[in-house]
Length: 255
Image (cartoon, rainbow, N blue to C red; front, side, top):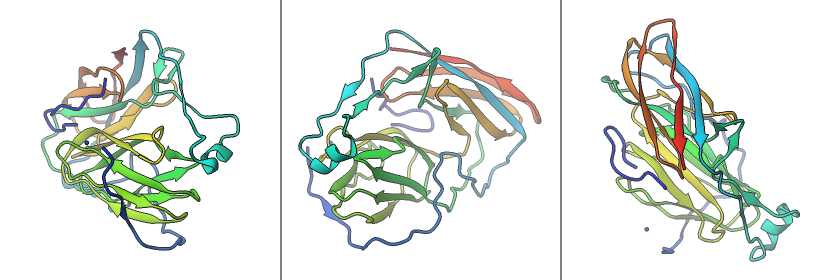
């Protein structure tokens, strides 16, 4: 199940014509490659934190094997084949879960100026889970010597579909409204899937392989926290945060 409905602060279309972007390969400027890029904040930053683990209960679905034969260059990059595992569980912990403060943040926060890099390597998206702030630049790069297109399908943000036929091509876009789990794909290679989440504040984290997470720099306050996965039902919890302390909050998702 993909959570796509509108939320309190966030919410989460057939092949369309590819809008080819021009530009030759070039040596890019440094790019923020993770979900926790520092932001220039208009709201208060604190010294409190929320940490815990997101666990999974249920039967783990089998991996999905991609059919690479339509593109010899993709097949050459994965001589032993390519499997996708949308639900990644290790020792009961669930990876690739977005844990964010759903309510309790009152002040506005400005986005980082550093772009977040979404790369296409070996006919896969790197990373496949993207979290950035409203207005933060998203730099999209094709590092493969084959045609890709990047096609997010948001509900409340503006949809775009950009082709990148040459290795080294880049384009930058941004999202102007908060929205969760925007499904993103490549029609040329249908196994390529990513999810883009856009938040209005910097208080979020992606779980590690073992399901652990930490949300830092929170001010004192009472918060509702939500854990969201691209394939599973979400879960929420409540927590109080004090300056200089880490509050524990474990959550569980079900299939």
